[in-house]
Amino acid sequence: MGVTSNIARRAWEHRESVVDGFSSRYRLKQLIYAERHEDIRDAIRREKAIKHWSRAWKIELIEADDPDWDDLYDTLI
Image 1 (tube, helix red, strand yellow):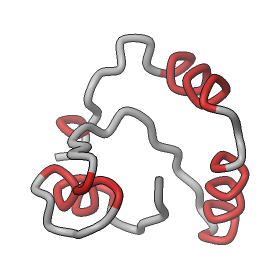
Image 2 (tube, helix red, strand yellow):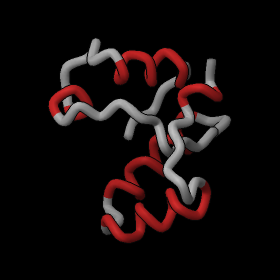
Image 3 (cartoon, one colour):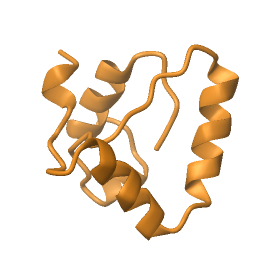
């Protein structure tokens, strides 16, 4: 999870483990879900809300949009 104005760069950083943190610690490499927001405040509010959801709700959200859990990185570049 996270808010960025450049999702392609951010996804690349995670794939290459350039930034220390959750994704590098757990070797997370795929982008499987993203939302676009015009206002950064809306994006931050949405991220905070989703962080409080149960894992099952998060999985439902992902599978509603990407049932095969395809890596979306290639669609960004």
